[in-house]
Length: 493
Image 1 (cartoon, rainbow, N blue to C red):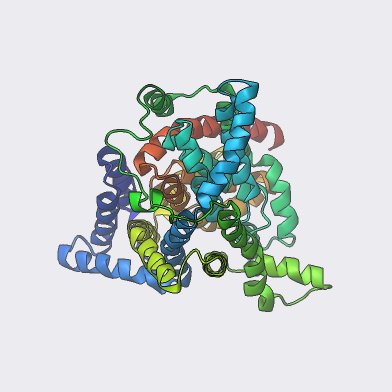
Image 2 (image 1 turned 120 degrees about the vertical axis):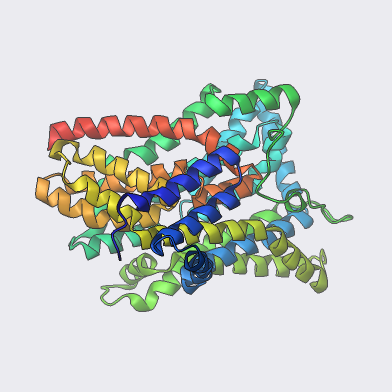
């Protein structure tokens, strides 16, 4: 890999600025990808352009990327299924009973209760961020719409309760990935190291706490306050210039006439998807376990070794098959209807799949440029031991913000942060926590983050509006986190 120096950070930064300024995420990402490969090819526009095209093709060389893109498309089929079967309508009917109960207690209280329920759902589904964001957006969007809560608020709750809970309760693919990175750095007890870092992982804790405070106090700031005011005064769930991530065909697809609305027609397929995630993790990681003392130990290690992308793809496919069997047995749909719905659902989510493709492609381009490595190497010479945790958090945040991936940030920064912690005598758990928290924080702020994209999609929100409304809350959490790391660094190092 050549050393591109300062040039390596220009493409992601320009892409992010373009996305925020123009609201044209596809164009911004395409430009970032193209400019990356122009730099790599010594500003030869012909070979650089051709390399950019091949770079997007090469995204599918990664089985994990391909599975994630397939999952993104298949989600559309599942959403149409539960909509057409009146499963969503049945769930809303049950939720309306809860709303009516609390509304009778105190006027306006139902808005708080529903938002808290959405947040709790996101935390409980810590097994996988995509499933968490998807489920919260899908389940609560109709109820939020009825209560005139802006779509941006739903996307914020879905996004800020998914990744934070997955990193704080790491019995999932996140935990497996982090333990693998710790092992490669020679950490003998990666599981205990990861668990001990949770107490110092301030940003995810603060992110969830801020969501709770915002909901309970009903106090919003920045763009979110404007969104709340807009919805309250005009009833508009989206801004006038909004381009919802999810097609109206999916969000407003009509239910089948003449059938009874039953909540379990939605709950069972979605619960199947959640339930199958740990099972698939165990299945895909079972043969990778070498030493185990018992079945329970083997099972736990297998979940840790499992493939997250395979598991989420298998989970959504299983959920679709379960839905098909349920609806066919109830005579809600015929086989041809189900096939047509699957194809229609996939077609409606093609824009999301394309966006995921571009996000992966710019991440690969940044890796080829050495963006993360450049930032990390540049910082080595001026890091003071006392400020090590705070600076690592900031650098991890910038890398995640620029590349849109927290996992990629973990992979880059763990290899640098752990040796630096050993050299400077810093507590390992504190430095690991700063690395992980920085990845999640940068990912929350980035418009090219896959979890933010899925949150926007599931909530049918404009993606850039979601990023803009979430940003002030994320920045508050980030600033408090940096302050805490500075204090702890001065005390502990």
